[in-house]
Each structure stands twice: as C-alpha cells, then as structure tokens.
Length: 184
Image 1 (tube, one colour):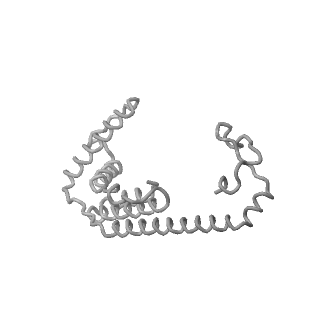
Image 2 (cartoon, rainbow, N blue to C red):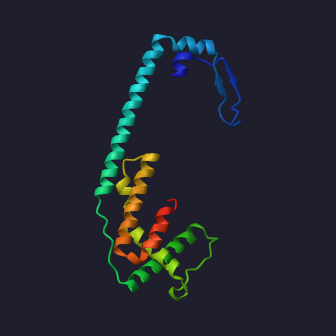
Image 3 (cartoon, rainbow, N blue to C red):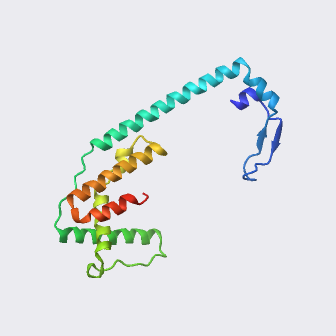
C-alpha cells in the first residue's frame, strides 16, 4: 500500500536495528498526509480493513472449531496394573533417551534401574508415558496456525489429558498437577 500510494521513498537510511537488513524507507510527512487525504487511500484502506476482518473471522471460526473438537474428544487412559505401568514407563524413558542420544551424541546419561528411582521420578516417567500414549495433538490441532489460538488450544488439550490421567490414576495426581503448571 505504501509503495503503491507513495512510490519511491524520499530517503533511504541503514536499518537502525540490523545493519544487514534492507535499508529503511523514509517519506516526507507532507507527502504522507496528502496521500492520506486522497480518495485512493480511503478506498485501498477500506479494502484492507475488509480483508483483515474476513481473515480474523476465518481464524476465529477455525479456532472455535478446533476447541469444540478438543472438548468433544474422548480421552481414554489405559488402565494398567502398577507393575505394568512402571515397566512401560521405564521402557518409554529408555527409548526417549536413545532417541535423544542419536540426536545429541554428547548426551551420555543412562536410565536408572527401577530399584534406584525415587517415587517422584518414577511418577514423572509414568505420566510422561501416559501423556505420549494419549497425544493426538497434531491431528486435533490441524487448521490452527501458530499464535494465541493454537497456544490456547494446546493448553486446553494438555489440561484435559492430565485430568484424564489423574482420574484414572489418582496416585499420579500430584505429578499431573505439577506438569500442568509447567510451561509446555
């Protein structure tokens, strides 16, 4: 819009934030004010406002649809015996560490044996395992771009998953509450 209505800048200066960035275009105030009083500016500005309103409405609609899907999504936590959940959580942790080691070879930590773990660490691993088993984040969040809409939808989904884990495994309630309060 600026290039269309004002044409070439009156002055080019180095970008004050980043010298490597394109130069800053500067326009005389009188030229800008004259263009803003013109009919073409009003027409172009009104069209831009309509496009912006339409885009905002579409984004709001997509956000609302995703939130409705998240609220309606059944979250079924598998009921496992304590020993089975422990074994699966430890195995999941080992796989996670192996993947991290492949991605970051400098990482050398080995998972501890179950007998060496304190209850809080094991609870953290159990909740992480269950959360990953329940995660359909990408599928449920399809259609949302980054930003506050996606962040809000992800937060709602996280809370629902942790709440489902807490209801199924009341002994993991404290760990669920801790993880919900952490940034994602």
